[in-house]
Image 1 (cartoon, rainbow, N blue to C red):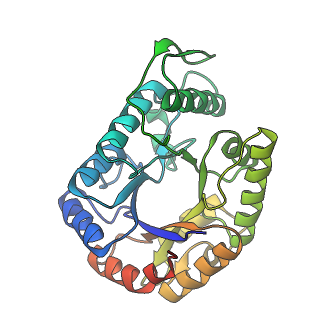
Image 2 (image 1 turned 180 degrees about the vertical axis):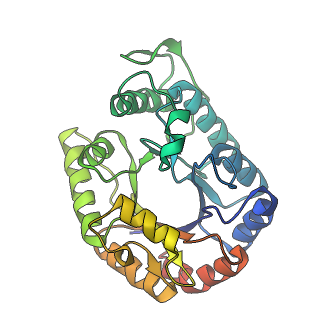
Image 3 (image 1 turned 90 degrees about the vertical axis):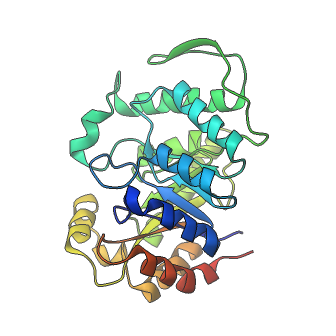
Length: 294
């Protein structure tokens, strides 16, 4: 299976530095760039950032790691995605989540019903719009008739989902083409992969074996207190040292463990905003890119 390792920016790169970072990623042959959706932070908006990066490069793939789907109309999201895919074939990697990670941002994505139910329905509508023409949809939250979003890519876009709660894993099995986790241990990654595969089989679907991945923060100067606090908030029963790599050798160890658990796709991001992203990228190229397989 193909092991691929891309990078995330976190809050370390704002608009002023973004162009130089994108150019450096393309020049270094990095597989992919992943942009998270955080409104109250310096980083660029993921759709704007994807568009800019794809227009500036020829080989770099760009994904959302992750964007929020509930709170957006699936038809408008579909239009954005097929437009990007038409402009940069094979380089658009959408991944979606249920809600923003920051509680103060959750009201920015209002939904017309229970968030999980809206997410499920939006995913059903989005998948139809990305694959079919003349789509009519009569759901509880979304309705439209005879809608064609196109032209479509020759190969339909893969939709990846995040989440580790039992309902999120079942959702990934029913609707996703891939899974991008975060803040979980290798043992939990194996359980999540098995649960998703089982849910997919129950829905008469199959997710490709190499479509399971994780976003991994790497600390280069000790574990930052703010990230430790976040890890403890999200996973209070797990030692943060099991969720965040403390240095590059620890990152290699953790990636090996995740590969053993069945994951093959990785998004590596800096654990803090301190330090130079250029230095982080140079170390990433030297330390982790050799772990990729052909």
